Image (cartoon, rainbow, N blue to C red; front, top):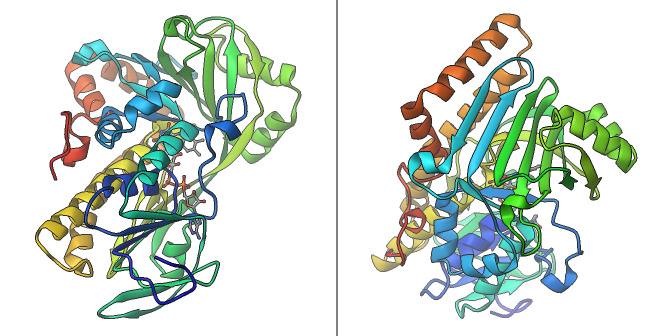
Amino acid sequence: MNSNSRLEKPDVLIAGAGMAGLALAAALADSEVSVLLIDPQMPPSPDQWPDAFDPRVSALTHASENILRKLGVWDDMAQYRISPFAHMDVWDRDGTGNIQFHARDVGEEHVGHIVENRITTHCLLQRVQAADNIEIRQQGLQKILERDQADGWLVVLEDGAELQPAILVGADGGRSRVRDQLGFRCRTWDYGQQAIVTTVKTEQPHQCTARQVFLESGPLAFLPLQEGAGNHHRSCISSIVWTLGHEQSKALTEMDDAAFCSQLAQAFEHRLGAVLSVDRRFRFPLIQNHAVYYAMPGVALIGDAAHSLHPLAGQGINLGFLDAAVLAEEIHRAAENQLPMQDFSILRRYQRRRKPHNLLMMSAMEGFKQLFGADLAPLRVLRNRGMSLFNQHGHLKNHIMVRAMGMEGDLPVLAQPGLLADF
Ligand SMILES: Cc1cc2nc3c(=O)[nH]c(=O)nc-3n(C[C@H](O)[C@H](O)[C@H](O)COP(=O)(O)OP(=O)(O)OC[C@H]3O[C@@H](n4cnc5c(N)ncnc54)[C@H](O)[C@@H]3O)c2cc1C
């Protein structure tokens, strides 16, 4: 394909080379489907990475691990750094509520892995670059013009190139231009909160445990990271996600390191002793957004473009990877059955398979958020008793955890355990 010449007509145009867009491209790699992947900002390569840990990390589930394994990138990611965690400890600062979970309770070695986003995007990009059927361009999508019933939407890139893909995929994140330009309706609410993310070193080792405390101001999570080549259990490095109101988060981001470390250790009840050092702090606004539809003729939304949710459950990109896997599965199925890529049934099936699952997860997260944000005394008592009862009810707890770990439910083939994808 050649920019600035005749109208280009790839089968699939993916706008956005974040984790979701890259995963979709990788799942379409080495097939008959022609793919163009565009993004004005390509993921940085390791020689551009600063020495510090990436402040943006994701807790990846077993389903995401399976997808990344089958896409052939997991082992590359492991060469850089992936941090398994085997335990979870969640408690409520207000009372006595406490939930603990061990991977061994469901016969597993780990609950999931904490992985820096830059490692995932870099390894996925390398996979995509190696595929003959995928072209990558460092260009933004500028506008979407009218739709030709037979051939699809006319798309203009920032360099003026015009394209007419059979399928346009909006993988362009929470502020998706594809979604907004085409008028996809959304249910949106602003939490009025921000998340501070950074990396800290604590006095005591994290022992491969992901910890989260529900404070009055919002949840505070410590996610265990691997420190060098040493024993992971003994590592004292954690990535933190601290959810707070705007003013509090601004004040905490601007205060000096020593004062921040002291406030953080106090908020975390010194569960890992003192906080000894902190990297640069970043703030992200927290907005929940869910597109009412994920598809219209010729266009589909995946990842944060379709849904962004509170990071308290660490599910955002895990849902995004499942979107990518299901959409790829439907595109491969259509190609096998020689269905034209413009056939809307492909995208309708994708939407039907993904929306109820995402909606369930988002409602559960919102319920959690409301329950833990509640100040009313009866709700507090209920919540503490509920947490303790839940903790004691092994069967129910394991059932819910197995779902949250992405080991059960209607999973696409790519997300199921096993060696090879069988589309
Ligand atoms: C504090 C915090 C903690 C989180 N923790 C977790 C966690 O533990 N686990 C988890 O699963 N999720 C987590 N998430 C959510 C997760 O980070 C997101 O769900 C994920 O990054 C979304 O990926 P994406 O590819 O959909 O979008 P993005 O990462 O936003 O990528 C979108 C891409 O589109 C590109 N783009 C934008 N506009 C255009 C355009 N016009 N044309 C072409 N390209 C364009 C951008 O440059 C970008 O590369 C967390 C989020 C936050 C804020």
